[in-house]
Length: 127
View 1 (cartoon, rainbow, N blue to C red):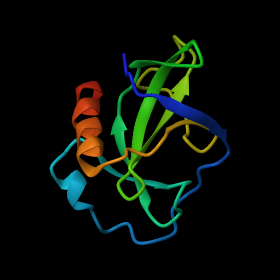
View 2 (cartoon, one colour):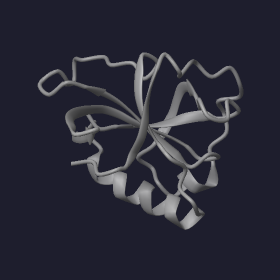
View 3 (cartoon, one colour):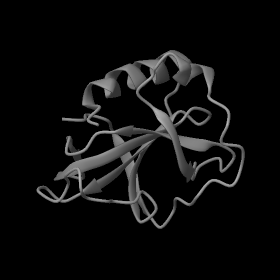
View 4 (cartoon, rainbow, N blue to C red):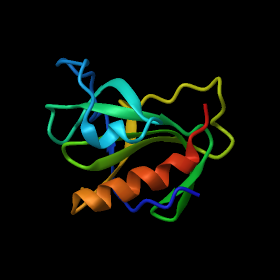
């Protein structure tokens, strides 16, 4: 179970990133599980989101059990986002875009806290 504290859900709040996709933040260079996505951070809008495939890992939001499709992070804002579906809905052939519905965490308060979250989420990599 992915036990991140989801602060809120956003609908249609994540769009494609229009900036430079060639950089890779130092904080993520120690973690080879995340890779660049085409989405931009809905919080700062200045950074792309980095993605971790988690296909089918379980998480909860407001007491509801959900299946995670992908986890995303913004290294600048130190937030995590998750595309989710209903139990039984997620598999390797499913496509659940982050742009339509996303869970989002509050920012990690420190760089070391953010690094701990990155390390924690690695265990859910699937694909």
